[in-house]
Length: 288
Image (cartoon, rainbow, N blue to C red; front, top):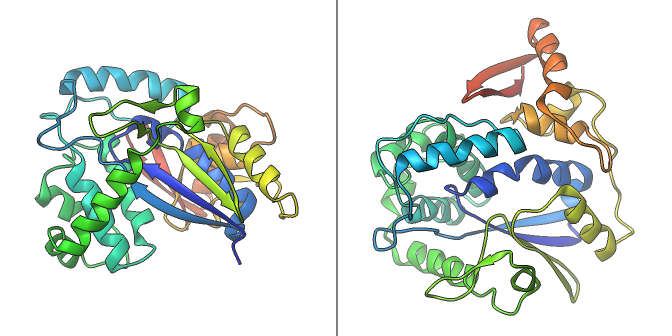
């Protein structure tokens, strides 16, 4: 039974929320089902509040994320800037209709948003993206987006994300001002154990997450790093990027890069033990 609850604030359009995936995968690897994860979507932009940049500006901005954090990015400019509220409602509908699938939907939208021409506010494209997610009916989800229960659940997440005033993240400057209130930035995580509550607001390292978990409950079992890429891929049937594999294989306070995992992954590919799906400037690796 899970002992610590973790609430993740995220949004499929946020490059910080996307680039935190190696750290989040490592935390999952170390503590498995001892952490009970919950997702709250932020809704960073909507038709009345579009992103404050142009498509070409965003493409150039992503060069630095690709270099610093290792997740795959395609840097070709998109046809236009898109808003994110509709995609967050898709994630919310998936959570209500197919509990647990919200994580698969979030990840799919993240990977496609940063590596394909996908527009997060185009309902036809969103439905096509959902076709790649196992265990759900895309038509059922898309038909439910404007139902009261979906809109109410989305608004509850949206409001919760804008309740960060006076929190530790606010003190650290890891929140954002918004007309509706001080907002948690992606990928903020609130950890709870009994009556204890600790925050890791905004973009954080695996060390920050790990020290919080260890202090909340030092009786937990902590897994050692994966010994090889094939072991790292074991708990992730939908696959990992190269940086995620390298992160799961890294030890405490150990820097990692794609090159730590890629040679081993290529060997496994030659042996037919993994599949490689090209993605942006990298790939998604899936155990065969």
